[in-house]
View 1 (spheres, one colour):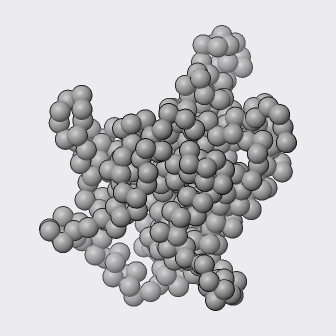
View 2 (tube, one colour):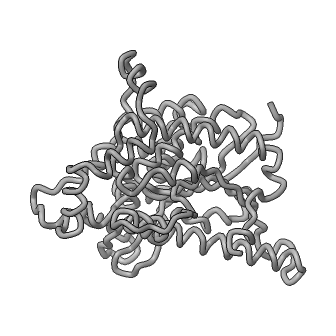
Length: 347
């Protein structure tokens, strides 16, 4: 074990049930006692993962963070606590087959059509956000505690279209729900602004920051930002079916804010490298990324809304595997250099 901790920041993307991939990544990072997480910026499923990690860490360190993440995803559908369930999961089909089965199911087709032609407000008094029962069970005394990783939760202000980053004592069940509020499925989450006294409405943070990187630029935080990416940046084949087109639109829109921030980081790094900026005037951010685009290309927007135990556990194991590969290749690079070629991302 390294006597000097390797301090990093985490940036956790949103993506519904695909956030179970991030569960696996975090589970693997917790195995490595050399690595210490200083801050986490999360959106949607990333926000829920961040809250679970922080709360558990405050309660019982690494073991507490792991247990709380397991609890979160058990609540969201990853129930596998019997020998029979374990046996069934071992014989389960691949993620790609699960995806196809769900995409072409009658139930998914009906739900997709309903989401396109109806509003969650049409339910009137019968409306209920199913995520509320999970978000309200977090211990916000520990989620908002001064110790442990600093948390930043992103949401989109409906009226202004700007990002809102909740941190410290401002993080609440409503802030988590706002970060995960897909407007075609959920009514906007309304939160009072203590500065103006007005009530503001929020949608999913993925539209404006998936996740927001800029809170992690604070001078007292580490230079390293490790992004856990669960929305594929590239797809080789041009989408042709209605489902494929809708899926790619979803991926592009939820990656656009992240790519803008990465482009800005790359610009600053070039200015520092050629001497146009003096060292210390701007932070020289070291960017890293854990992803599995091969797996995520097999999935779709349909499976983001299908938190079944087979898929969630496929994703968790894939996340652990991707983190294992990253640490084997790049652990020595942490606190030393970026492992993402930002220039290559835009060429």
